[in-house]
Image 1: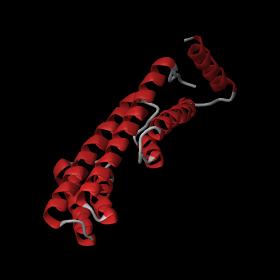
Image 2: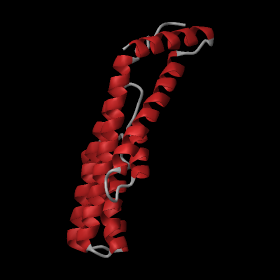
Image 3: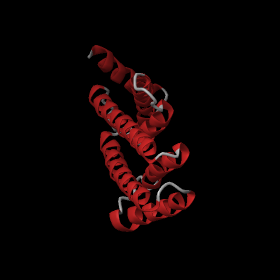
Length: 183
């Protein structure tokens, strides 16, 4: 724990000497969070056959925030919109098969369901991205079973990476306290 208390004291000293604002210090903590989360996600997914650590790291960054309450909101929004994209993607595979038409129409319907029905605005983009993974992998592999398995595998990687980002944000906020004082 002394490393983190030293880190907090060092951050406060830097803040005063360099006249850094609360937001600057949060940005530094965010950089540390992303670095730690990247090592965790990349290392774990290297152990998983056919994993895509790069896509997962990008997802982790998108769902991260230096403030745990914001990270939690992003994770929740990402989870909900991913489930919407997955459900609509699977529905379109069942009714339309794997084609460029089912992909185009499926993505458009996913956006409508996400924006008009579910209405969790944060991470609206996640719903059609997830649907594209589910439908698109079927087109690429030419096999519904292989495509669905691979698409769902990618969705699981995204959830894992987002959870790592959220967890690291929470842990770091407890270990590295940043006071929002008036400068």
